[in-house]
Length: 134
Image 1 (tube, one colour):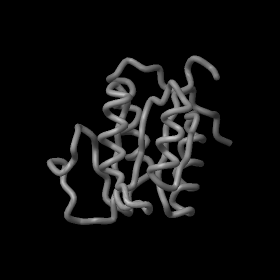
Image 2 (cartoon, helix red, strand yellow):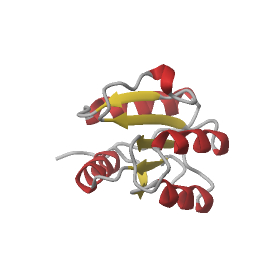
Image 3 (cartoon, helix red, strand yellow):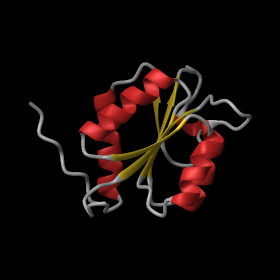
Image 4 (tube, one colour):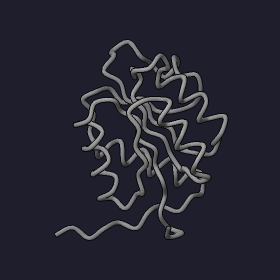
């Protein structure tokens, strides 16, 4: 893995949304790990020493929510970027168990990526090299 490449863990149970987000992040130069539920995400966290950011849905199958994951991830990776996406209109920043940013579905991929870039830059992690687009 190149030193300039940041790794993002995407946790989304809707396959189309997950794949769209993965492709957008990869197009921006990010290395992406993907999971469809919290247990898969925990497996990635256990196996990968370096994860620079998390993008997670709130409502996930399996009994644990994205908010549960957010709290666990923040304990394991306190310096990582954290973004929560949700179709629930009642979720506010104050409802998050730790500092993070909420985007309501449908969200702009450009806005999510810009927020990841900002959080990663603020933590002093090197941003990925942008791919040239044709």
